[in-house]
Length: 94
Image (cartoon, rainbow, N blue to C red):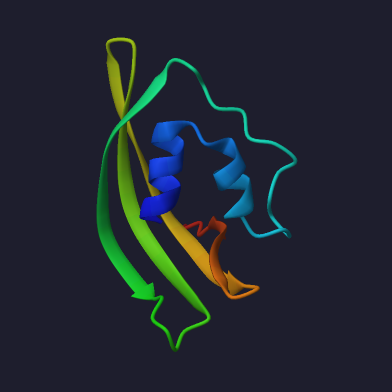
């Protein structure tokens, strides 16, 4: 999770695509050139150890676009794929 956040900060779309599960990965990532990520707060995790094949991360990522500030709150699911942890999808809550 932290490496993907760093990739968003660094605008490394190649890494974002490589760390995305092939089943849910988009053909390309279009990053907003005006958006600047300013902080990551991991609130909760499940799984994710050496013995697990999946895990979740609930986080808040803060950003700025011009003078406007905002945040993205997501509960993400990660799975092991070919031995590496990859982003699968966001868990929707009702």
